[in-house]
Amino acid sequence: MLAPIIALALASCSNGSGAAQNTQSAETAKAASAAGLQSGLGSRAKNRKITFLLSQDPGDSFWGTISQGAKDAAQLFNIDLNLQTSQGDPSKYNDLIGSAVADKPAAIAAVIDDPKRYTENVCAASKAGISVLAYNITQQGEVAACTSGFVGQNFEEAGYLLGQRLIAEAKLPRGAKVFTPVEFPEQVYAIQRNAGVQKALDAIGAKTEMVATGIDDAGALDKMSQYLLGHKNTAAIVPLGGTPHRNVEAAMSDVGVKVPVVGFDLSKPVIDGIKSGAILAAADQQPYVQGFQTVAQLALHLDFGLSPATINSGGSGLVDKSNVAVVEQLAGKIR
Image (cartoon, rainbow, N blue to C red):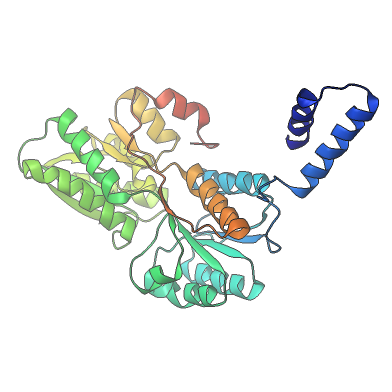
């Protein structure tokens, strides 16, 4: 796109005409295109390798959207992108970080869902002069000193928004019991999301209860159904992760329960639930932003030494009936 734009600009500024000027304009445009933008973006850094580590299968719609964002940014900024996945295996993921250090890319993008497991390899990369940018999940403590920024949802803020929405629309009684199923209750995303929901529910004295579901759909459905059967006083459900969220409507149907639901992360079942009214609202992490902005920030860092920042990919909006049509149209691509 750059060459035609430059050629048009040169032609519009010229007072003369003729083949010689047109040839000069075309040659100038071609040279500018080959060299990259005038600023040098996309061409200044010699090492343009970025290893982008996915913790789950990119065949999953959420992680596929992250990888699409990363690939689009890599193409735009002339990055040599190496996408790898551990298929959900934490030990393999740690090995991928270690292997990336040996491969000597200019930068690494990593999901730091376990601070203790990954600290040694992440900090080894940093000490080797490889920039490490965390995305999706990050941590405090020692490992944080070895990362340069974070692109992902502000989990507690999003949880608070959902909790407020639940109170406003569901008219929960004081002291209500709220079920908050999540894949891995011990992970930082679960803890912070639940804290945000609980902070909002404190206003009416309601209490949350987290239950582990894992990432297997059948297993998650069974665990949620069993919980609802044993807890008839459940007043509302706030799935804290994509797996329980996409199975929540089926779980309620299995046991004949219908309570208000708000939750985290989007998928086709969640979008369908919002459209039908079974789900009031969902907090979207905007995974495309996590992929795109992670690579974009690293490209700016490589070319100009600009320090990556922390970006809240989730923003402050929720998906509900008022905007679900737009989200549905872009699902699996940009949303």
